[in-house]
Length: 538
Ligand code: HEM
Image (cartoon, rainbow, N blue to C red; front, side, top):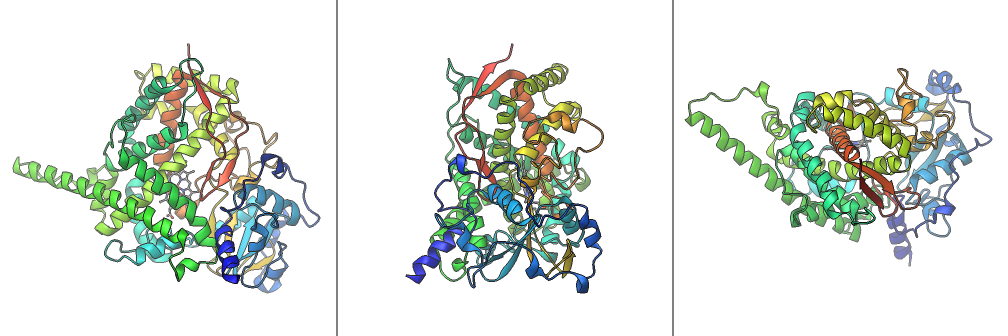
């Protein structure tokens, strides 16, 4: 009996799964009033100076009740729990209302968990993240990889911390963060995006302009864009059926589904192969097989090209001129096993993030036709001057587009915030925060608070057009911040901006679905089918 209950808890505690879908009307209200113990925002700056001995004990931080062994798990159980494992942003709003801007919880196994709602506290946390910022995530993925030393030499960039993380990161980011390396793929990215825009005209319903299975199409698009940007390979035409694309998309979904519950639950997977862990193994086997194939294919291709050049009497290419991202992984001194791991991680990082963000951009534009018209005017003006192609010049001049993207990140970020493990005893907001505490920032919640943005529920890209930032710089952080922020940011932004420009210049996008919120998997995904209409622009 106890085993069954523990098993159940293990499934729900990851702040997702197993909980019946919460009806939308049961959601916490969008605006929150401060609780009795709410400290004014400014008091924080003062508390940042407080010494450890003078600070209040960690246990005095308000938060939901905890039980031995299971921590706060019971609050997430169906029917009896007050929080939904599938709606972290609703939980966050409720916790802010109940406890104030700093909230303490416990994960099973006695791990301290802290939620931060004040941008000054978030800034203070980042200021103390140190040389090797540490995250506690993808723990089961780490086990999967470390158990297979013949396939991987580390747990990969997502779960690894400390010096080993930096060794991977510094080599990988040399090319992934390099403007010229990412921009060199723009012509191919644009080609894929134009193909997608053309595909829409073929697959939409003749009368209504509706497109069935739009999310699947988007995932196919972002798989192709990620592979094109990173590996310089095309999987195939977007409307060709591809088993490999389907398998990859499914494996990425599966991995995203199991990460939170395996990270935050009772972690029985460390001792027995739980159903959740078996799902991860199967998904990761698929991703590994496909990533290995790509890497081997590209490696062969490059070797042949080099041999051919040598045979023709040309000198070896100078590594300074290497622009392809995968090529530069080869040149960076990374082991082959690390490269396969990195390619797997970027496939995991690039598909759903792009597809979901694109969905929320289109949703926001479809519900704000006046803003969509402004963007269409900008897109047409810029594309008319470049033969319909998105170029680096077009992107650099697309000011309104960038404001649209920022406003979408504010209203619909793909993650609740960022996670960090505090690496040494520290003081935040006048409280002692012990080493090893896991902090999760609540940017998704605070981005919609009126104290940061007037009229916060409205989609107003214009907020971002002024010189001064509209709010504290640590309120909206869609890609994180600092040395451990998103390594794929440049690539993601290039892909997203290109597809939005191509679509909006050609189509008026409408929305015939209801209100779209999100469900919390590892990342936030749309909680209803995507019901867009696409009609030709005059
Ligand atoms: C709209 C698109 C995307 C968003 C909003 C996004 C957001 C994020 C965020 C919030 C983090 C955590 C940052 C932190 O802990 O400070 C992250 C990390 C990461 N992202 Fe992205 N991401 C996106 C696209 C991509 C793409 C396209 C790739 C790869 C091609 C990618 C690969 C990664 C990787 C590997 C990490 C872990 C980095 C590390 O731990 O050093 N992401 N991303």
